[in-house]
Amino acid sequence: MHELGITQNIVAIVTEHAQGAKVQRVLLQIGKLSAIMPDAIRFCFDICSQGTVLEKAKLEILETPGLGKCCECGLEVPLEKPFGRCQCGSSQIDVIAGEELKIKEIEIEEVCV
Ligand SMILES: [Zn+2]
Image 1 (cartoon, protein in one colour):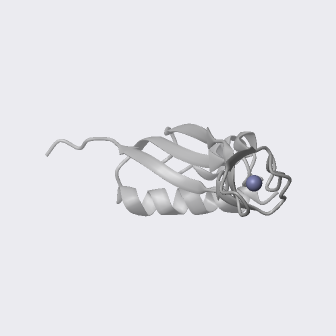
Image 2 (cartoon, rainbow, N blue to C red; image 1 turned 180 degrees about the horizontal axis):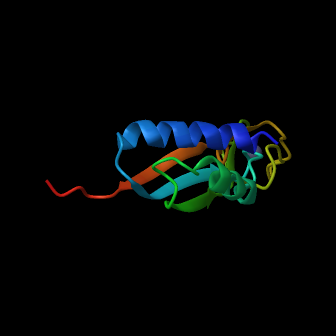
């Protein structure tokens, strides 16, 4: 299960960003073609965030659909898998969206000074 390593990475990046402040919300963007299971990330997040500034943080996951572009005719093709076939019959499709894993937003508790 490679989601555990990915989640550990995310927790490490967010922890560094928060600089000791409590994190309230993390928004992840996960592409449908990335082969990363959002449910597995959620599960690992619960484990990985324990004892860190992310412990009570809300994890939100935004799934982005797969999109490819045909190399032959330039048509954009929605993709369920990292390969497909264009209407023109070509199977030469470049994946242009849906493989990403990004930390979109991090919400940190405001500290009153
Ligand atoms: Zn085409």
